[in-house]
Image 1 (cartoon, rainbow, N blue to C red):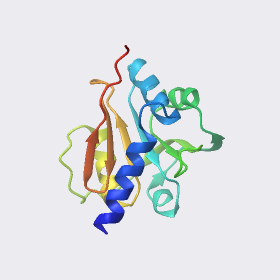
Image 2: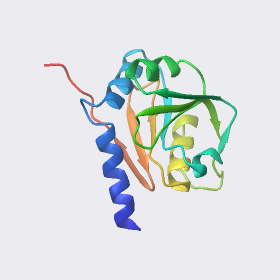
Image 3: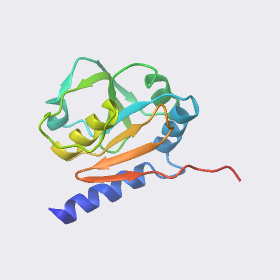
Amino acid sequence: MAARRSAAVQTALAQASPGTPLRDGLDRIVKAKMGALVVVGDGPDVLNICSGGFLLDAVFSPQRLSELAKMDGAIILAADASRIARANVHLVPNPDVPTSETGTRHRTAERVARSIDVPVISVSEDMGVITVYAGPMKHVLEEIRAC
């Protein structure tokens, strides 16, 4: 189980690493001084905690991700981040799952990642910080600095 979670964390970090389309989209959100909640995975476990929103099933692009972040709610991506499955989704994770986070977006991200086996990315609107949650792990991405 621990090895599988470690692999999930590594996959999530690789998907959000510099130079990837997902990271480009996340950086666009930070530059626009917006926040976001992005779930990387759209299987039955994810759909069971989704309420409302819009079914999109659109090809992923950094521009689409940043435009959809203007709406409230979570953005649900395919597990390989190649498609945007849903947007404007209200996530309803188990409120009994412990969290150390204080902000609503980050609490939700941590609870979802601890509850189901999917990485969740939270972009802080106030701090401009991108955090990846996978299982019990939390990893803050370093800012990409221009040369």
